[in-house]
Image (cartoon, rainbow, N blue to C red; front, side):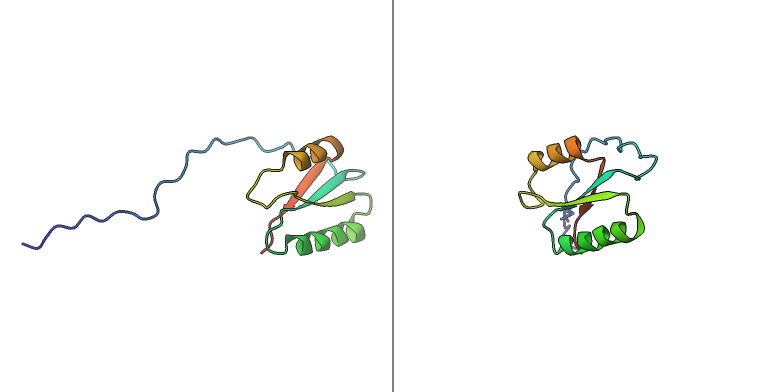
Length: 97
């Protein structure tokens, strides 16, 4: 009889997560400030510049603010999140390609 082998799954086990509610949807973006957040991941700022231009051409009543995280995308940036909460109405996070 052949020898018995034990095989382990190399993917491991996913971490436990706690779901959070999504932010409520705004009824309109007219007159609102949208922060475009560069997460410093593979040219995300290039994507956000195109998003900024789209808003300027298609929704000129929306004010956009392009900001970059103070750290790499893998580190939290409470200072930037506080700024957006205090001054903005919504945010779009750019994660590159």
